[in-house]
Image 1 (cartoon, rainbow over the protein chains, first blue to last red):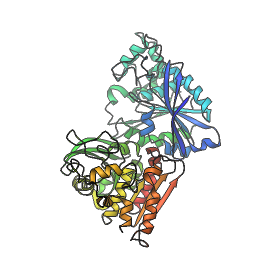
Image 2 (image 1 turned 90 degrees about the vertical axis):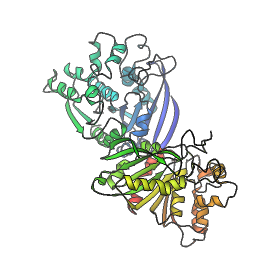
Image 3 (image 1 turned 180 degrees about the vertical axis):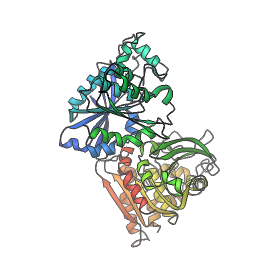
Image 4 (image 1 turned 60 degrees about the vertical axis):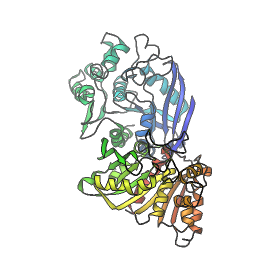
Length: 280
Length: 280
């Protein structure tokens, strides 16, 4: 692992790091904020998965998480959203390829060589973070925004023992049917939609996957709400799935007047950090 | 004035606007955050002047001012740092021309036509803000970073009745002698250094200008500290100038481990906003 930069901020250290990912077959960059409490021993880890077009840097610059993370003593890890590099197959669309990994393990050529973000986020990067930073991997939670909200919810539903808590800002709750993501699922995962269900929170809930509690904040002035995000589909699936009556306890908050950007995310960042801290 | 964008954030509205500046002879873009209290009547105004290479956007995205501004009920106005446009004379250096207006009124051709940031910040933009927003122009304060810290201090020293308070993050306190700015002063203002003194906080203090109080935060790991910023020169000038004994009451805080970036600024943003709110 190579250190690209470190900057003191709110008493802790915001770092940016690079490593060779065997899973993705390329160099990957990620950001870690270590709170001052890490000087005294391992701290819990909160994963933030970013949305379409983002790198590790967007939330690091605009998310306003450091003040509260420093108060609560939580490390914040912000991965990139896809493999990158001259040898990595890409596409001109902002909804596919670089910046649009959708946190799936692609099965279709030529994407199956590099686009393995599910395994990268679930296994490879946590192993690296555990080895390199003063963190307590028995205390992990996960959240994210939009495509990364999808990633966080899907990760939590499939790995409920790994994460103490899960939340999302404006997540794509049903990516296999959403305008924004359906084509990407087809190109990464092939024509058989049965395999898509493992990466779709609504389908996972319908198929009986549950997580104890989730928090979703969603702006009602979000231009992607009706065509892509549709949190009400996940709310319904939590009620109607085979986990019904014992399903995910979802707190869905519609936030009047808010959009899809970091101006929205930063407004509710503190609430989410305190939600996770109470459960970590 | 044209609205480029508005986004709800922390209960208020973060807007970006464009207008034709007669003073600068070009279109100028600026950002205004209006806190929720503005719905009930005019709110005080805090001006933030940005540093070299910045536009209005850097502090808007990375400065983390909205949470506390919304709590305190203060409008935050973030101007651009120079005139811009195909017809505006520029230079390849990041220390001169676009992004490097230094808040002076240039007297040397060809820069004297457009580079009139002192008059723009002092007169033209305040007139526009007063006309377009629900603000109380009898309650104005000013702060800034680096080149913009220089701008804020110089503006306050020359217009002590205009501003209720002044603070700076890592300001260039003596730009007429600093490596980062000396050449720009020569090209904007000509060879006669007598005219430079009106734009230099150390010279202004030496020449008897005072402001009741100032707060400066300065990281001691800031790579520009010794060659460009040197807050100790301003501290000394406050003591030794003709205003001696009745000079500016300076609070200079050296912050261990902090650098020159927004990771530093955002850490101390809340302190500065509360400093201004107590005086507005």
